Amino acid sequence: MYERILVPLDGSELAQIALPYAEKLAGVLGSQIILIYISESADDRYHHMHQFYLQQMVEATKQNAERYLDKREGRTIKVDSVILVGDPAEEIVDYAGKEDIGLIVMSTHGRSGIKRWAMGSVAEKVLRATKQPMAIIRAKGARPDMLGERSILSKILVTLDGSKESEAVIPYIEELASKLQLEIILLQVIAPDYHIYAAGGPEYGIYAEQQIESMKKFARDYLEGVSTRLKQRAVVAKPEIMFGTAAEAIINFADQTNASLVAMTTHGRSGVSRWALGSVAERVLRAGNTPLLLVRTPGAVTE
Image (tube, rainbow, N blue to C red):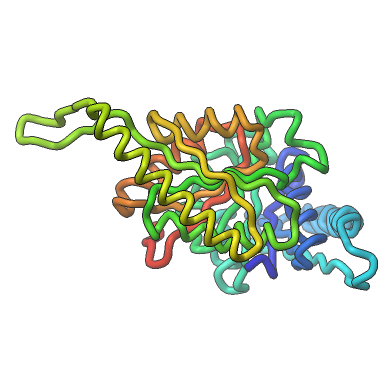
């Protein structure tokens, strides 16, 4: 799943914040890293400078990734680079698809700050269009405790909603857990209220206490079932249940537990209307403080 990792760079330190995550994955899982730079013009007079920059990044990335190698295995790290010309988002998406990239790791900021790489620009366009799993690393506002080598990919919060669609992220977590000493938390958020759409508009209501207890039991049984299946694959996961608005609860829980990564799918129980960008996933993406791994469910439609 993680055989080839693509990291888009633009020459800025902010974009390079994504590199430590790719380096750790490559060192532990044996992944190949590909650094990609997009030039907006074929007549770019700074082309040679871009090449020199990428060459430096390749050497530094390889050296950093090799710190995670098990010397007894005799493996080496392969880091390559490519410069393409065109629209940044389109070139990243096309390259990732054609080259069968297993994971795109990308910062939400870049060369000219929020105007270029922030959500709403290149990173968001890539996320909406790509079929590849994507890790979004927040370049601005990230907690200092997440920047240390030991903190990177140490505790993963996996959000589930009881559907098979939301479980599409689990195989990706299993592979990480097979090589990394991870703490995995399975979280399901239960809304304390509900709404239905009537002719006069949406109507809201509060669940009765008996209904809430029944929902808690259902969620607990579900999460324990997922945890049991993971345990059979030598993956230990702790189930947790929270009440509240899904996105807000996920963000708050990730902060409270100092999670190093939130993992979720872009679909869920009600399909695209529930988990697609524009709903829970997008709210977590825009308002959260934790790096986010998004996996598109099979059959999902990209823009």
